[in-house]
Image (cartoon, rainbow, N blue to C red):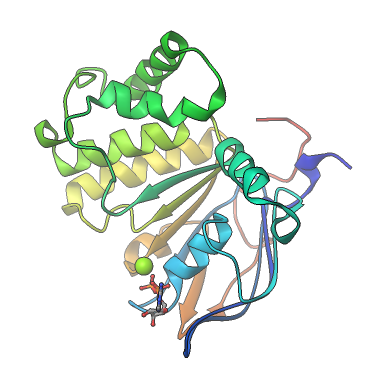
Length: 241
Ligand code: ADP
Ligand code: MG
């Protein structure tokens, strides 16, 4: 079986506790290649916990996690880092751009672990910055950019290595509604180009605008139309991205 036939994400009976807090309880979720979905719920409902587990940044207390067919609990730290670097792009609410670093270098740093030479990393960074509409901001530092522009730089950094999976935790949470709309349009474009996109949000309008809406409450999935209802989802085709 080829890797592309596996779901991109498979959580089975995943729970996560922090001391006495049950952040996530018995979560089952399958995400297929080419899907775009929202994970929505009020603050504290376990959304970030779920994203961190999907992104292999955190391990579950119980249950199993597979990412493109790799059982996460079977991987050591080095293998996990390699899986993340090659498979998953992350976008966070607060951008996480280093101050004083020009956009071009921030994005090129997204390829640090690719083994590609610096010149090539910068060329790829320029290309993806143009793609997100920031061809005129290549040498701007974060403090010279608006919030929406910063988030577009962060998205460019997340996707410069062409990861099949993009995980975004409240990507519009720190933006005004116009910038938020631009960022959501960009995520839709990436989805249309074949990336599997998971958007964490507490914004019910954004959630409702996505093809699949998974609702969390008190650490439990209380609603999930599932993959079959995910309009526009591409079934595995064997096309490697
Ligand atoms: P959301 O992203 O939906 O706001 P989180 O996943 O961040 O929710 O948090 C879910 C619950 O787990 C909350 O009660 C939160 O306080 C708790 N929690 C999350 N991370 C930690 C942590 N590192 N240590 C202790 N408790 C945590
Ligand atoms: Mg959160």
